[in-house]
Image (cartoon, rainbow, N blue to C red; front, side, top):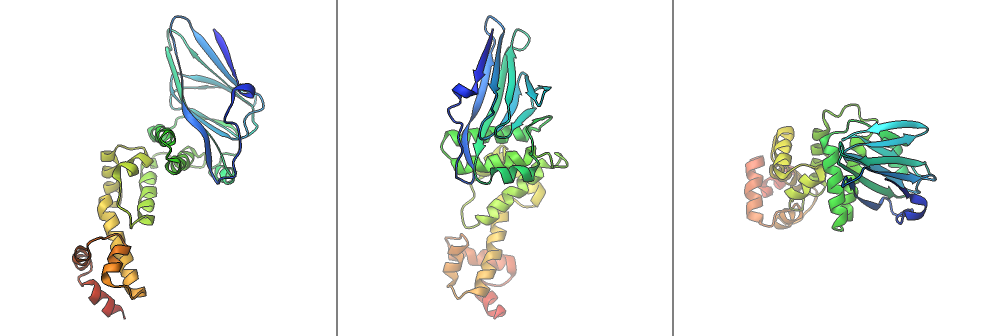
Length: 279
């Protein structure tokens, strides 16, 4: 049994957006074998007006790009640019009873620039991705479904970075994810860390994220943030006349006395002494 998904008539999310990045749709597509073999052909002769990533997570898929046929297995994927013909087929039978792939369609004013910078200048098949790619793809879909658009877009950017043809090696993907998250923590140093959210953005479990973060940076996420907060406090003490309590609050410490104790332990002097010594 062969069915055709013709995008010319059935794509309901095929549009552009004036947002910097916008996810039109994403989700999980699957097909299960019941009594008879089934085949579905996804066909968009004129492509879509947005971008399209797809990752095979179960079974296999056959795609045609520029007249060439590609056989994709679990861990492989597809990337389509706007207006490029899309044609790929999935099948299930007794030997392959289940097929599943993840997908995301997106657009935006900076999408083309970001993708070209990452090396996605042509529609292409993508082979041998890592487990992090699947975890981040799944995190993207979860965030989108619960309405957390900003985190979903963050995961989309991580996905693009991980799949980038210009990535020289995938061996240090975990390290790059952790370092990117360290930058996020640094730029949000006055906010309390949500380890579950950090882990989800990286595509790791909470325990795995904490372990890798500590291994790569030498301190736990909380200690890393604490160190950064205290360094920011030093700058405020030197560049402003804010009371010590307001300096503490500005860098994320609600208790000024606790801040002062940590500060002295870190630098050997109290905040007031530090300020006086710098004048």
